[in-house]
Image (cartoon, rainbow, N blue to C red; front, side, top):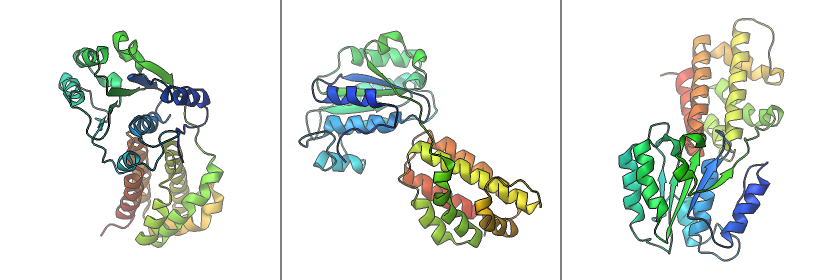
Length: 291
């Protein structure tokens, strides 16, 4: 589907960005919002729109540029994502060097900088130099959960957009999605575990994190069943969870519970959905059924 698509609660931001894309888009934008609000997803959409060569609403999703972006193979897009690490001055200097290179495929180059507040003061000052006088073809998309940690001199040179917190799906909508995975897990069927996990690929980050939380609740019930305790929170999954409790020792169920928490935290770094889903399957199988 063409065009920008933001999570619910961001209609005003979406309308403003669409209007900017159809006229004169600012060369530096700062996307602000809490974890899980979709900042990096929006940053990628904006990069796609800026680099899109199709007609009509951008990104079109079908032009050569959009296809390259879909495969993470566009030479004119640089994504700076160092996870939770601090960003040193050398990184800012590297960004300055990157934008001095003329675009390869078109007339624009885009740099996405995740966690801009992680730049130390020297790094922010180094970045400021290129934001003050960017090459005409260079566009910057910065994201941050803590804009107050960014120098005012940088913030003043960015057009800022505030994203609303993500809304997680209702757990009752997610139960049918996790049941095939838990059923295959109880059977020790790695192939069908993988199929069930990969079916979750299209979930937005907030949805995937909600699913992991629901899996943790299911594992809590399985631990209760293993200890002959009452008080199951997901009675509709009782059959599969009782079979899981009978097959997998309690300590491994608790280990898998912790692993799901780790995956949820990794989701904050915007790890690719396919990698996250495959990781859920591989990790769950290895924990529950070690060779």
